[in-house]
Length: 290
Image (cartoon, rainbow, N blue to C red):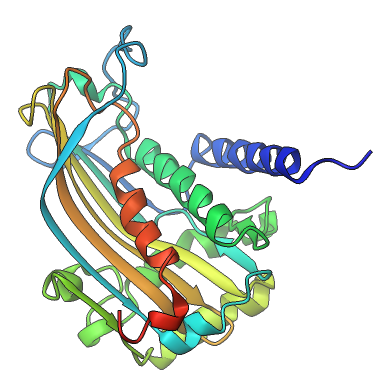
């Protein structure tokens, strides 16, 4: 008997999440930094005792302030989006999770937990925007053969160190922070080395697009709002890897403060979801004048 489309979507979603769990709890290919106290590197296995009340006190309610943002898109690349193509999904290339030495709301907070939370948001948005697009995790044993483990271990560093906007590294927030508040259609020239690297990945693994969350930095602050909060910074990008072109890039920075007694011990990426969806849902016919 054929499965209904809705049931099939649920099953497919479950399989994707199962794959993500396997990945995020087995170790990530990207760069991870769990920092404590003054910002020194910490052991990600050092976690506070589990919170017995978590998940039983209602919804986390946040107030977003101090927001900065930037987004740009390549109208030509965006307009020729193949909604049935294969997109290779990378973990965030560099994650920095910062927290105080003493933090009762940080028991589940870590670089890997942040990345898994973001991946869940990304998956939901991709399914909503491009339901026919096939998403493949760019991990050894999945889209990548196991023998490519060493290659992938160095790939995050190579991508982050690649020259891009204003000659700065792809992993540098500076070009986007300096353009706070700007939204623009922009045909940015991709340096030859980065273009070759992207097209090489596309050819090697037979994918058309690459979703690349570049850098994510989150710092927990127990003194924010009624029950704590956090600051969030991210640069997220989608590439037409076959042609070595940027499709769009989103930079988002904000402070999230609680307005209720529920601490932000999970779902840190939820406020970013609506900001990323703004790019996914933009009317292609109005891109130039948006």
